[in-house]
Image (cartoon, rainbow, N blue to C red; front, side, top):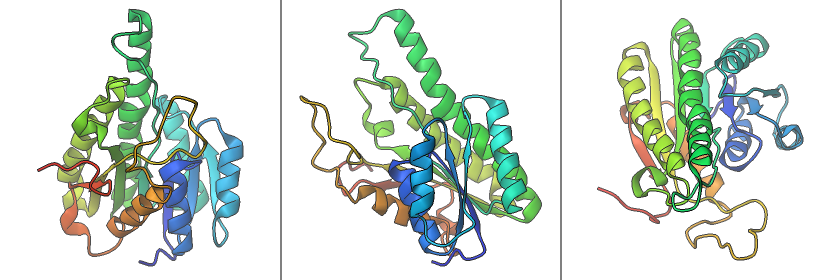
Amino acid sequence: MDFTGQHILITGASGGIGRACALEFARRGGTVAIHYHENADAARSTLMALDNTGHTTIAADLSDPAGVDTLIEHVVEVFGRIDVLINHASVFEPHPPTQVNYADWCAAWTRTLATNLTGTANVAYRTAQHMLGIGGGRIINISADAAFKGQADAPAYAVSKAGLNALGQSLALAYGPHNIYVYTIAAGTIAPEAPMPIGKSTPRSARPDAAADVARTAAFLASPGAEMLTGGIIDANRAAYLRS
């Protein structure tokens, strides 16, 4: 898998799976645009860790359609083209239904869906508009196993990821005839980058190298030969959650 000469936009690339994808694609010769929302220091840390040169960082609020426009226009201006989009940016805001009041419940749903679903859809749409003009490309959306098993303390997160699965299937149908292939990776729990607070624990299935595993899966899907998988939802969770 060689991405020399290709330009990759990764949203939410300042940490987690997004950072792992940036490292993986840069290691394989790609030039990476590192998107972040507010954590400029983490984005710069990702940038400094990448192999080769020519990479860039850009801040944008994906919950704002104008922010999405700015993001895509900037990356195209800097790189000239976007060959691969990794849609990773998302927020996780706990709002346990048995504990939060109605105002907090509504706010959590609004913020979560605005970034995780609507914002991701807008990034995919604007990137695909560009890809139509260059003859094709790859879009890889990062979902989660919560889409299938739920999330008791953050139902809006689970719903946003379920919507992301349907988005990928819909866009694969729409863009397939135009050589734009769309995939979804339903990632399992990723080990936190910082120690968990007292009283919290990480599931046994969450390994420190899980983000790198997901990144390698993304690199495979972005490579020639994976076209038959367009529209697919690929589980990447080391059998922590199985479905049929």
